[in-house]
Amino acid sequence: MNTPRTALLSVSDKTGIVDLAAALVDQGWRILSTGGTATTIAAAGLPVTEVSGHTGFPEIMDGRVKTLHPAIHGGLLARAGVDDDALTEHGITAIDLLAVNLYPFAATVARPDCTFSEAIEQIDVGGPAMLRAAAKNHGRVCVLTDPDDYASVAAGLPQLPDPDRRRALAVKAFAHTAAYDGQISQWLSAQAVPGELPPVLNLSLDRIQSLRYGENPHQAAGLYRERTAPAGGLAGARPIQGKALSYNNLLDADAAWKAVRGLNAGQPACVIIKHTNPCGAAQAETIEAAYQAALACDPTSAFGGIIAFNRQIDPSLARLVTQRFVEVVLAPSLSVEASEVFAAKPNLRVIVPEASPATGLDLRPIDGGWLVQQTDRPAPGETDWTVATRRAPSARERADLHFAWAVVQTVRSNAIVYARDQATIGIGAGQMSRVDSARIGAWKAAEAGLDLADGVMASDAFFPFADSIETAAERGIRAVIQPGGSMRDQEVIEACDRHDIAMILTGRRHFRH
Image (cartoon, rainbow, N blue to C red; front, side):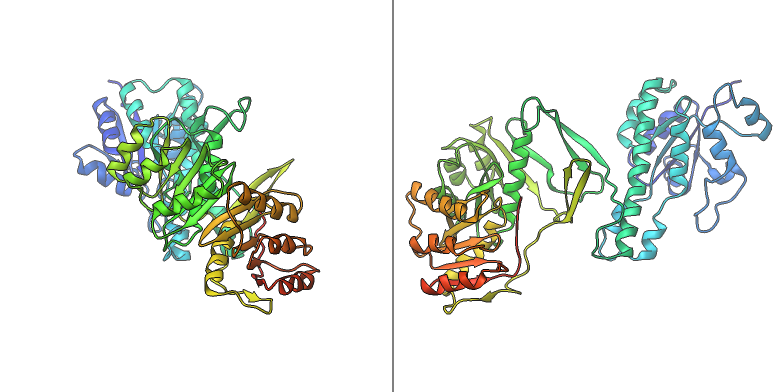
């Protein structure tokens, strides 16, 4: 009589484990398991042997030591045709299939009320050891870490997957343990020196979508998601309709979604993006009015743009949006009737991202390395704001300054934003000199038929000279907001006073290179 083959199942995520166990039992396999997994399998009426019964050694130290035993690791590491005598000599049974996923460390430490001791207890030791052993010996052993793989393996029984498939599953197992160790290392580093960047940064990214190409057709590209990323966000969003998102679509959609979320959540708001820069933004009493005001800033550049809203899209707004060529529309939700309007434009991409917390780090590659910084976030309220001029801004001007200051942080440096009545009326982006951005923003306003008189101006960094103030004054700007910090701040203040322009210094720069 043939000795039954043996599988060891020990999982934190119980998804699909009973079906896998049932398929193995149907093929005459013997099931080893631990703790909660064994209880789950037994509750389904399936035969299962506790690991402690197999090894003859009990679980000890509140379960810290369960599978760290030669009967387990010898069974996983034994090479077919090489270690058979050692197995016989020591009474070890070969284990041909291992299904393990690890303690939910990342989910545990993501909880606001997680204590240090709770986190430490969620560091899995036996699981990674078994996974590494099985993955190393994938020439004989099938190793499973993902419930999505259970069904295909079960369907192939009594045969195990072929060598190429076992190798792919082993790669997946090593990626699983590497990501897990990275999560632990990164979290412990952050606890050691709160507020500082970790000395070692581990990232584990899963490709969730292959893109047609990158910024240009000759560049391969894909969309990846960090394994520990919180739910929601643009990367996790499901498009409602439209063509597949391109690399450039995703870049612009990300800029649009971040920009609209940075505006006052208490008011309906709209941001229109082109090449990651706003070409219009507005807050208004209604979402439709916000869209119309944002579009009025630069309707030429808005052609083929990406539009983000912070309110539900209704059919009236959907009809307005579809009157022009738009690449992507983003909103927290849309009505059924709005969906029907958009359906008449099947190529239009419509996305409803779920809310997610802002990521803590920005990463950018340089030749031979990576630059890492904390994500730029605006200071709350007016904590460090000071009025530097003789005249303080009026209530209306101050409201517009708040709005312009939020928008300018989303514009490529050197950045200038002109605004009035909670809407942009001119944007100057990405110039090598600040005064050129001021002039371009004014020129764009004139091109759109917008008057800058009685508007405000925001600058993402200090004015090195007073020339931008002169440019603004010539066009009737009444208030300015900027970080300050230039060696010529006094000259800039004096220029504002000469023209009776109110100016606020925020004390915080927002470069965006």
